[in-house]
Image (cartoon, rainbow, N blue to C red; front, side, top):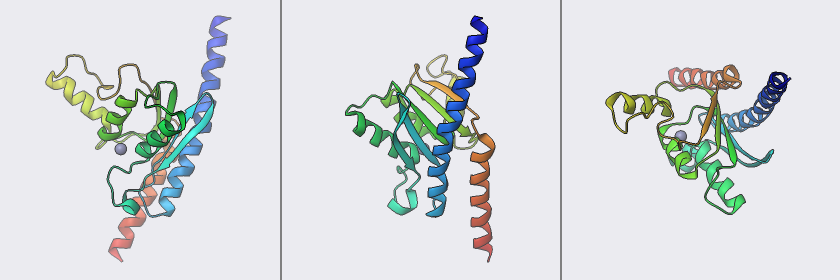
Length: 176
Ligand SMILES: [Zn+2]
């Protein structure tokens, strides 16, 4: 019975994660339309979206204008406080070290991301730190707040595909 309930709530959570990731994907598509690297994010508090963001580095000529940074700022503004420990960040791509660091400061409760970023993602840095023995057992959550829960791979294919298509288009444009 308990197991059945657990399964039900896990299933419910997965459905909810996919629903919010679709909204993050819409944000990513919007970035793509603006010729920005298509990454999108939404922040959810008590079942509602309170902040949205998409990558705007080109438009703002600012490398801190990642989707997550925009979403963190507007979520804090919405809640009237710096801490986001009761919020979930949905983002289409694994956060970079800068955004993971901002996530640390906001104490974001949960991060759900779609595609992996093996080169620039934050996870790699946690692993490197652990290998070099800095801070003892850093592990792959390294740059995040220890209480932040992470769930990856939600709509991974779709999130990755959007990025892939963007870079193929970019490359073709450069060649022509
Ligand atoms: Zn970032």
